[in-house]
Length: 327
Image (tube, rainbow, N blue to C red; front, side, top):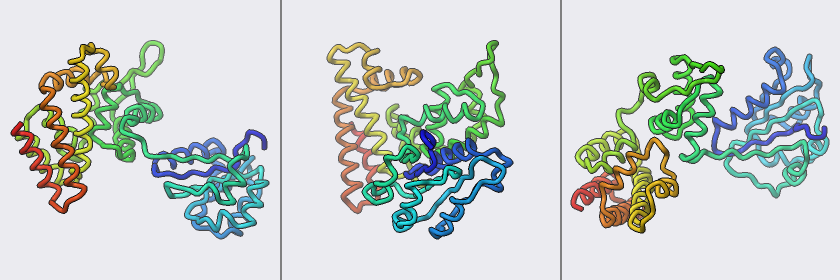
């Protein structure tokens, strides 16, 4: 049993990645032809049902897998469960999937199990936006295609941070684009030009189109795009948040520029991706430092109104665009 994981416990907000990790475990333990006799998915099981299956011998396989979902603390902390986790069956891999973002590690179950070599506790949170492009590239490689950084960023912009949507678009790419290889057999990254025609967008515009128009000072187009994406369900408070981060970055870079810092260092300390370099420099040259300072203040005022008043959110954002046009 040493160094062999027999009990996994997953929890967190990222359902997609949790399910992927569970599938990896199942595939590593069981061959396809062994699943029917050696895999059980238990939904809200009684303790006796779990113990009976977890303690049974596998058929035509070295191990069996038991996946347990929709259980509560009383199930985990029952004395019979505590006895099981003290000495789990070496023939069974148990996967607990707790569909919650938090757990109480001070319960008897975790005090008994979390320091055991055969127990693994995994919290899988939602990815930050900054982590998504890298994850998209990794996911695409699993599907047999390679993406450039620019292509991964493009997909993230047009799918949002919903990994299910991202996965669907990558499946579409994998089936619609041939993954070429170089002379050494290494996959060649698919350029952005080949990706755009394949990905079908569910929305005509998104939050990044709006922010691009605002930073381009095309406020008439920004007003129109806002009404479209607001009608599609986009939240003004999210728009304000993303735009605030972009404007603060430009304001900080403007201060750094005036202090004599060179452009390459400015780009580096502000984590500007290489393919966004031209756009960032263009936006930086389009604004004076006082304009950026005032824009940040307008965004802070709009954010405060959205969070503390009962004014209609769309009117608050439209007021922000109007005030921005007067700067």
